[in-house]
Image 1 (cartoon, rainbow, N blue to C red):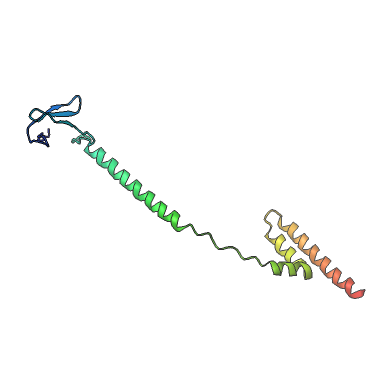
Image 2: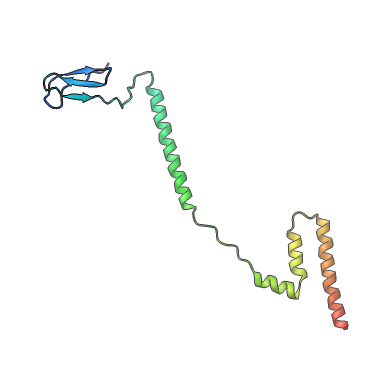
Length: 136
């Protein structure tokens, strides 16, 4: 049991404590004081659990702070991927089989043998155009 000196803050006389109403009264000067029971009493039985809850809350706050710092640091967007649009256009105009070959080779939904057939067909059309253009 903890003993607390209950004296009046105004005159220094002893206070009468009413535990039911959380008030203290001074018989000498008539002051009425409100007892604040915000602090939780700690005894040997719950001291460990209170310490555990405090440490758990401290670690949670520390983790949230670190997470917020990481989120703030990662605000910058990744650099934009350079697209060589000019070269793609030139490839389609002058040597169309090269862009077609690249696009077909990157396609993951096609089977390898279908990719090979498409690429061979495109290159054959390209060479036939060259041969017939020369003969005309």
